[in-house]
Image (cartoon, rainbow, N blue to C red; front, side):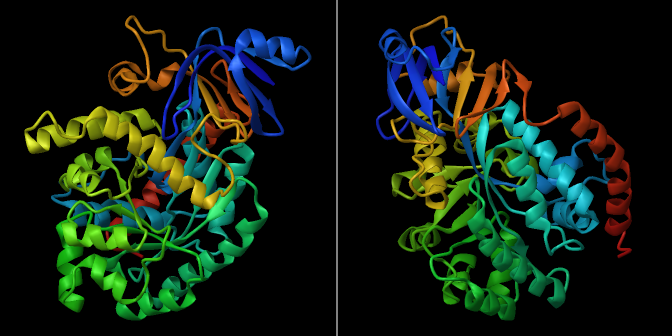
Length: 448
């Protein structure tokens, strides 16, 4: 396929913006790049896709999400609003994950994947929980990912909050899927843990003993002060050194949030080769505070951008990160646009490439996998490498994504989904949601 008459945005360490250019896709990868006229003459027989002047960019990457929460949209909680994040967990999310069964896991994944394709997010790093449907749960999500044609990294969050048998089942599911994912081209695996505050010493010991060589973990860290307080009560240590005591911080691990992690903890994560993922919309929604993002970036700590299941419009996360830290610090110099762009593109891509080695994810370059989006953005002011982040922050909308391509396969063209039936998925989700909400409400009242 020859995508021509496009403005290419390459991203990568040295982003370029090139108008009236073309990409030749072959065998799922970018085979050639150059001015449109030249490539059209060289490849006259290639299937042509006229971009009509649209931007062509690498697909967006999400460093931390929760597909299982998709059916919570619109769900109202009985009684007064939760007063803090621990109450949100206890009254909303933990009863919801216990209420999930195989059908609602599958449809939640499909709803999230429809959302991702429409919003131009082509790689998702997911963190799953379903206490009463553990074994095989990651296969349900992986099958949906393959049906959609997207790319994902999956894990199961091990926790003690549902008892030792389910904690053991979570460990087993991670290990099983690490083996199973080796046979899937667009799906990879890592090892999930929930958070220090729901993990006892024995379970941490078992996870450390089970963790295969070369595999990192994906875990929530200090999202709220309660995580640090619990860790200090249990061990006399803060969260990061507590997990480090068990040698869990392997290179390639993901520490989600780190809102209340001290500088020394972030430095330890950096020494261990761990990535920190930042989810600003979720942090604002849960009222947990703002991470020390500028300090982390100034220290050279690799910070990525996720969405925590808030929806797969990653440009909304760009904008939230850009604004949150300015208001939290009362300083308009915080979270500058070019730093946000590097997090969301260069850092997210480097993280994703650990799971898909040799892919060249996140960059338009010969040899890189053809994970691309077409964006119908026609600015009224000059657009170039120097001001691109601010065009995205102040001009881009997710509705401008017209075409989504993963590994050369067109998943959406001219805003029409080709691999998933959005109406059928929506109808099935609407049919399942009321029963799921009733189960969640019953479990939230303490009836297990």
